[in-house]
Image (cartoon, rainbow, N blue to C red):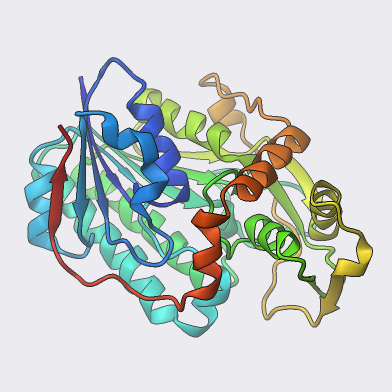
Length: 335
């Protein structure tokens, strides 16, 4: 039976993954450890709180004693918790390095002390940097361009070093851009969607020619669960297979779904160190049986529909200054 500690489980991808775990008969306990900073909200877990197997702990992955206390009660870890927004990393790089690198070290060291059976470290395709052509494989060097990507590349190496040095059964996943319901409205799809629904304009960096691969969050969670169950320790798994699209073409799809036209789009000077193109090979995870199944147009329609139906969830987030939750311990057992 799996007893899984999920860090960052009240965030966007983490909350989708927690609900997935709770649908499995061989999962006896899921503990969410989340600091509830601006992008983490218990509401993201929704009906998961009805499941008695869920335990929610309000705390920080940098809190060594708390991490040790929780680690002793589990046999697997899936590590989502991270500072994750590129723009924020340009002005608050220290926070990214502290949380992403030192937080991963705290977790991995504790996992080793408690003989955890599988440690899945969740990362990003941004660690490979911008590619003029071709696609990055797992053995290719990391070449991050911005502090966020650098902090994730460093945390990948920290996690993998615990496999090489101590034999901790670590796997790393690197996914392309995720989208879907519940995402905090600072990433491009929810940002554009919520602005258009409010009757505002959206802005493109440069001419919007930057290419990203868009993978539905549930497809990403399919891959992460597969790595949790069948991934080989010490390996990196690229999770791609979504749809390549320029930001301009993505904006056009969102305009149509929101009933708007090109008059709602403006261009601004390009962001500093804005990678032109990301691309990954994902044959290694495909060999384990991974196949993305969500159609982009259907997934975008579902996502826009969720934001249209749930303004009470996202509207306050667009008006309230970002506030970091206090560093307190709060454990909620759901019965």
